[in-house]
Amino acid sequence: MPASRSFLISDLLRAYRAGNLTPTELVEEALARADRAPEHHVWITRRSPEELLRHARAIEERSIDELPLYGIPFVIKDNIDLAEMPTTAGCAAYSYTPTRSARVVQRLLDAGALPLGKTNLDQFATGLVGARSPYGACRNSFHRDFISGGSSSGSAVAVATGLASFSLGTDTAGSGRIPAAFNNIVGLKPSLGRLSTRGVVPACRSLDCVSIFALTTEDAAAVLRVAEGFDADDPFSRRQTERTLSGRRFGVPHGGQLQFFGDGEYARLFEQAIARIESLGGSIVRIDFAPFLDAAQLLYGGPWVAERYAALEEFIRRRPDALHPVTRAVIEKSADFSAVDAFKGLYRLMVLKRAAERAWESADVLLTPTAGTVYEIGRVEADPIRLNTHLGYYTNFMNLLDLAGVAVPTGFRTDGLPFGVTLVGRRGTDASLLAWGGRLHRASVQRLGALELAMPTTTTEPHVRTFGDLPLQDSFMSIAVCGAHMEGLPLNHQLLDRGGRFVRKAKTAARYRLFALPGEPARPGLVRDSSGGGSIELEIWTLRSHEVASFIEGIPAPLGLGKIELEGGATVTGFMCESYGTDGAVEITPLGGWRPYLASISAVAKEIEYAADTMPDAHH
Image 1 (spheres, rainbow, N blue to C red):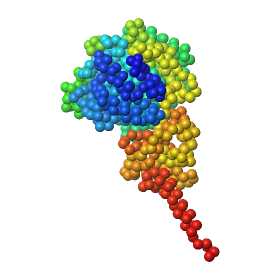
Image 2: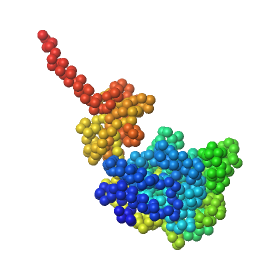
Image 3: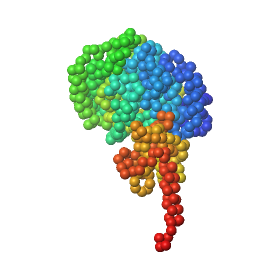
Image 4: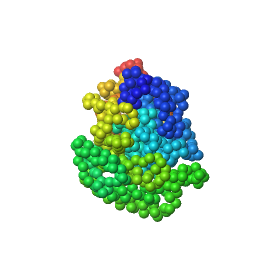
C-alpha cells in the first residue's frame, strides 16, 4: 500500500471496489502509521494487530454494498465504550471494561467501520486544552509546543495526522470544535440527542453529545448518516426533524463583542472568513451576542458544574486522589451550589434563551471564530483555569441554548498554526450547516489536516446524492424484507426496479411476532415483542441511498421502516408493522416466516381443490 494513501472515506471505498485494497491491507498500513507517531500522545489503548486483522477478515466476508463504512478505520475518545476494551475517561483508577459498545459505536460497527483504539482526552472530558491527562499532554499536529485543544484531543489529532479516517469525540462545552480548529479539520457538534449517548461516561449528562471529527464535511456527513438515530434506551435521545436554512444571512457578533485575547492574526483571519462568506453569496448582519456570552458563563460559573460531580460522585468519594489536580479543582466548585441555585440557574437560562432567540429574527446562521486564540502547552499548565475559560468564549453557550454547530478550517497564521470558524444553527440544521461549512472550507484552505493531502475535487454527476445541499459519496443502505418484497414474490420488482441487490438470508432475534394482515394483497406484519415471540426469516437487500425515499413512499400503512434486531445482536433497517395494524390479523409466528405461510395456504388450497374434484356430483 502506498504510504501516502488517502484515508478519506470516498477514496478508501473506491479502492476497495476497484480491488486495489482490502481491509487487512488497510490494517497493516494503519498499524504502521500508529507506530510512527508516538510523540503526539494520541492513544490510551490500541487494539492489538491480531484483533484488528480478525475484525478486518470478518468485514471482508461481507458485501461492500451492504456496509456503507466498509473497512473505514476510526478511533474513539476514551470516554465512549468499545466492547472488551477498557474505558478510562483519562483516569486509570476509574477504568472498567464494558461488555457492550456504546450505541453510537455499535451503529458504526454494524456499518462496517473498523475501530483502531481509544484516544487521549482531558480527564473526564473536563477541559478545552488536551493537557489535563495522566497519559501525557496531547500535542498539536502542527507544532508540538502548542495545545491540541480538548477535551477530545487524541481523536482530533488522530484524524489530522492521518491515523484514522474519522473519529468520535464528545462535546459539552466545545470539546468537539476547539480541537478541530487547532488541527485544521472539521468538527461536527450535532443537535443534542441526535446521536445516542448511551455508553458514554457523562460529563454534564443533560448537555453531553457525541461529536464527529473528519477531514472534510462530506466525510463528517457520511458518518453522521450512519451514527444518528433515536435510541429508546437513552433518556436524552430525541427524534430529529431536519430543518433547512431558509436564507443566507450570517449573524456576526458586534465588533465590541468579538474577543481575540491579543491575537491580531486570529482577528485578521476572522475578517477574511467573513469576506469569503460574502463572496459565496452570504450576507453579513451584526447581532447582539450578549445573551450567548451570558449563557456561556452559566456552564462553569453556574450550577451546571454540579452535573460533573453528580456523574462521578461515588468515584470522587472513594478516590479523590486519582483526579488530575485541575480536574478536581473544577469539579469541587460544585459544592458551592445548592438546589435553590440550580433552579435559579435554570430560570436565568430560560431568560437568556428567549433573549438569544432575537438573533434568529435577523440571521439564519451565526458565524463566530471557533476560538479567540491558541496557547502553548506551558502557558496553559501555568494558568490552567483562566486560559481554558478564554478558549470557551465562543463555545460554552451552544448546548445550553440547544444549538448545532460545525467547525471548519479557514486559514493559517503566519507561524503555520491553523485557524477556523464555527457555523451555528438552531436544532435540526445540522445538514445545512455541513453544506455551508463545506463551501466555506473549500473556498478557504486546500490542505487537509496536517497531511500533504489536498482538498478533493467535488463532483457534479447527477447520480451523486446529497445531505442537505452537500454532495456525498454514493453509498448503499441495507433493508430487511419479510414478505412480498422477497425474491420471486409479487413486490420484489420494487427493489429490482431501483437497482436493489440481494445480499443474504437472515433471521430476526427471537423477539418478534409475525401476522398475516387482513386485506389484499396478502402481506405480513412484523411486530417486536420483547416478552415473547420467535425468530422470523428475512432477506437483506441493498438500495442506493438516493433510491430509498421513493421506495418508502410506496409503503402503505400500517407498515413502515424501523430497526430490526438480528440473531447475534446486529441491527438492520427493515419492514415493521404498527401494533394497531394487527387487529383482525392471523398470527403466523410459529411458521417462522412468510414463505412457510404461503406454502401452508397453498397446501390448504390444493387440499380443498382435491376435495372438490373428488366430491360426488350434487345431482346424484
